[in-house]
Length: 287
Image (tube, rainbow, N blue to C red; front, side, top):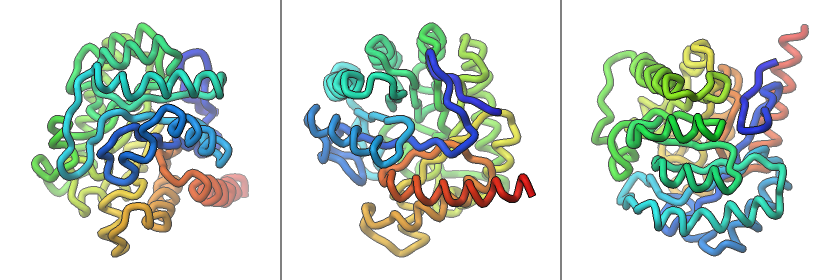
């Protein structure tokens, strides 16, 4: 049975794992500004767990497709730390993830009880991240992207040859190797192909359709398609909050191809859909 080691516990991958998103930012593309206060964010976290989230993923810096503005570590911590502390008080045993590219932020939140660091730059933007996460025994998600925080959600670096997943895999495997060299244990690493990050719709579709190749590398695979532009373009839905159906379709396809960890806004719908799809897949395996 495969597991993902995160600090002092391990998440079994014998069922889909759902990361519920809590963005404590004013400018995230879908839910920016909705959970700016500590109490609002904590209550949202509790709701997401009641709906079936296995992990809560807190983000304090937007990487939205247009106009993402980097923030310094002090501002990011001002947004994130009170929420981490509030959730740790309310949900003492629940694994908590923080989405950050800064080792100073990672160090502080890990000291406050966070279990997972979700780095959308796969440690590219701050080489100290590997040592910080290794010292804490944190679980890590290494996501493929190109460019800085203000660029990775754009098409500036969305240039690929005919084998998009091959290029993504090459960059992610190098990132994982660097993380292990810094002391992060293999069983603590998850790879995310970065749907929508430095990728046009055709690139994102290509990587979702080749998740099985990434899964074969030997790390658990995470997918973050929730409400994204690619879902809107494929389904013709302009409003991000209305892209639940398309998100579910992409996640179920990724599950069938080997993804096991799913970062979503709409936890209840994702939990039900993924559990049904998983039951069907399991029945095939035991037939």
